[in-house]
Amino acid sequence: MLREIPGIAPARMYDGCTQNAYHLYMFRYDPAAFAGLSRAGFLKALHAEGIPGSGGYTPLNRVSFLQTALESKGFQRLFSKKVLDDWRDRNQCPANDRLCGEAVWFTQNMLLGSAGDVEQIAAAVRKIQSHAAELAKV
Image (cartoon, rainbow, N blue to C red; front, side, top):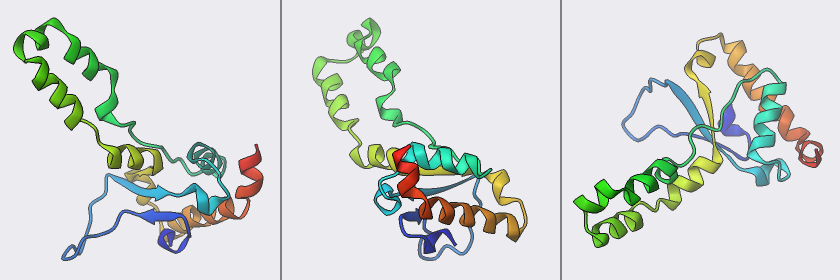
């Protein structure tokens, strides 16, 4: 049902895969299909509809403790400046950064309900989309 909503791209099943065991159900959210409503605005509207969604992780390759570790005396004693600089370059993950800005997560307990419960999720997303222009102004 979510796949049918423009601007929502659920995680796909790969060829040869017949089942998935989700502990999280994730999809990409495209604000362009929701009158520019930000992901934060979309999540707020989902919560208002009684659907607990999350934006998931921030890009873990950018967490501050990594930079702190690279600048530490211990790392600088163990690794050359070139090795540390190369690691910083290899740690750039633009596709992951983009995904972290687009992702919406549902926890597994949301998928344990009835078919009607799942239909309510899709109905809430459709409702948000139909009112996205007004929500984007707030």
